[in-house]
Length: 398
Image (cartoon, rainbow, N blue to C red; front, side, top):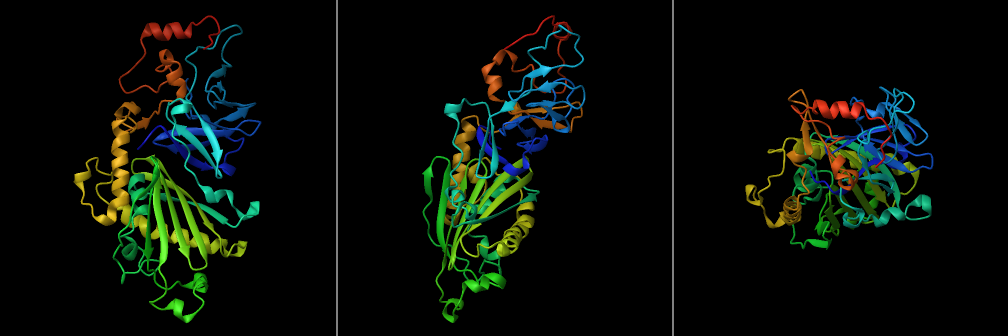
């Protein structure tokens, strides 16, 4: 799993004034909106006794812990401790991680890392999303989600893989009579993405989409191929662009790592044909049928995680797009952007662990960074430290 990237973690219309729990990279977050409508992302763990803030309520722009009523503002600082007597201050260490947030393409994006703004990778470009029918454009969009019991990188590679189509998707859009993959060039428009464009020869469409082939010639084996572009966009996204006889179908997937072997995929499917509402259900059904075919195969892949060593699995010319991803992944791991044991804590129950991704606030106030960290098994603050914090006589400000 990779940190220091923007993750599209939830559809924007699901983030409201009611605290919402989501999990990304193994870390629980609470999402909500301020009174002005700005989305907020905080660690979903009260700094006091570890209650889930997502079970709480909102007071003005602060989330209120359901256990003891501590309030945390959008920056993660505690602003109220109801149990305090008048005049007793709020410890500087009373805070939770706050992560940068943006709203774009119908999603709430959270930056899972501690890099300063000028060093952060950009949110990937989804140019077609600005051209929606509801805005007077040509693309109609449907959305959905799908839960996989797979590592997100295995899913990412599957979405870019060309050679699996005739076998996993045989009879749908894969043609087992034409399994060969033509030579292609990996296109890398920037350091964060890569794409491959090939001509495929799918079988004749069935059902509603059979209308795409309107004459006998287009139905036989001599009909022109379907040009398809598939690629990855870091840290976890897939783009698939299929150029059908009647128009374009473009699917964006954000593969959210719940943990290393569980992934929640949230997707947007765009089309510039059959743009009426009447075709939406069929469009959703087709996307989900693709996942239904892929998931059992990918879920059963071993090892569950991509090998760190490129030589650990065999690669062919048809795997170039996957190899490009693995090489870039190696570079980022060497840079320290891979989630590692240093980002994980183990609780009092040995089998229970969690990820704690450092936020920009930790980097900004390094002397307090450990203060609001979840404690690992076997670590306990010293008696002096606990007593000093409990007897803090006056408000402290960062």
